[in-house]
Length: 222
Image 1 (cartoon, one colour):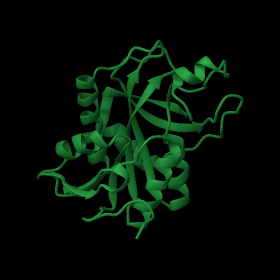
Image 2: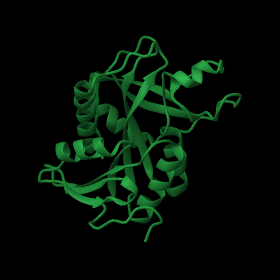
Image 3: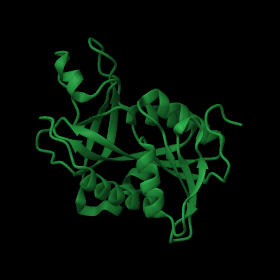
Image 4: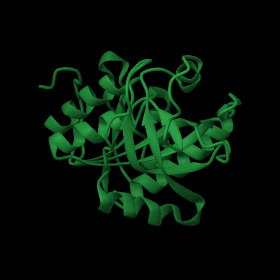
């Protein structure tokens, strides 16, 4: 039995990963043909198992907040048989041209620690899964890099840290890509711009709409 997850239902070989447990339920309701069946509630990491309208089994699993939590959950999922996964997450815009609600398919991720740390080497997603994700989203998405921070973007910028060399910032993607490579789990990611560089935030309804669109594309790509 894995160290953190305590599944009470099947776990599929393919998974959609989200940070927020509430968003996990939202996407399970959106992506499954029938009522979602909870597969995990241990540690508040809600997970669901179901079948898509296309007949594919799919797990939707919350990973918690931050890279360490996400990496630990991914290790448990790998032990339970997950082989391919797409992160559907939120991010803050570093590029001022990105609009709230835009979707960004991640082409590479860099880990950053606290103030005074240096940018980590690029960690890459699975190329085939990323290409499939781009194809599903078509012209509704742009591709970019993400800086995965230990703190929210606004806090990072307040420290006077060096400028981030990325389109967006989040707190999980680099850790997932790096851990996935070590576990032989193919990973890709699509992020919703939920916060503008100036601090304006996407409202809950618009966030849910964008997350559902990203989730549908993730399920189809898998």
